Image 1 (cartoon, helix red, strand yellow):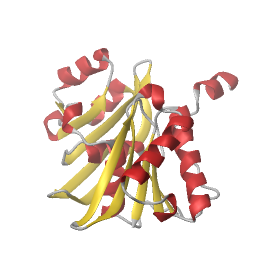
Image 2 (cartoon, rainbow, N blue to C red):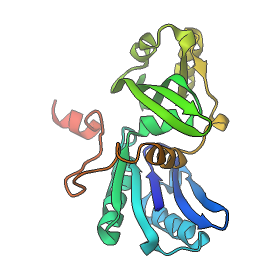
Image 3 (cartoon, one colour):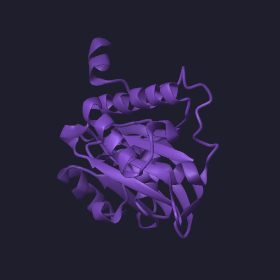
Image 4 (tube, rainbow, N blue to C red):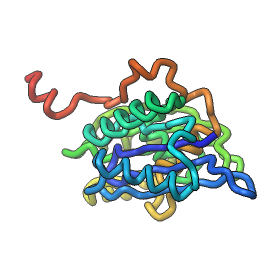
Length: 234
């Protein structure tokens, strides 16, 4: 099954195409999306390039999996709108996974893993997962807390005892210092796979868990209101 994965929820967006038929079985192609390229007009050409490189046609895509937030409000909306549009045009299945679950799985960590995304002003989007692996296969994904939007100090307080947790995040230097002081094990960015590939891995491991029952009414999970909405409510 040819599966397209989309994630533009953070500054390090990515797209991937999995289930590409080859003489040896199946393969995966991926593409990074730098922050300045996370726009719908640049994501679509990227998808076209992946599909062409795979020797496939857009109509061969039978499943779309998207990072459903939290993260950048604009980025999450872009992926959600594209995924729903592609699904409607092709009649493909729609699957959605938390952006934080994709970060946690893509980190390569196992045991208790906390994924975090900078939410500015000392806050983060965060979630904790218990991850079990059998080689490259994810055999267990247990939600431990979140997703939440909260001060990073509160998130660090959840990670007890610190030595039993791994933190997968790209954070400002002041928050990185706090994480180091707390004694939580850090996973460096170069140790991780792209979130789009992690979305493919999640969908392959748990094909029913992320399936969207009604794509016409599905909406991403922003976790908190946008800054504009928060200002308007004051």
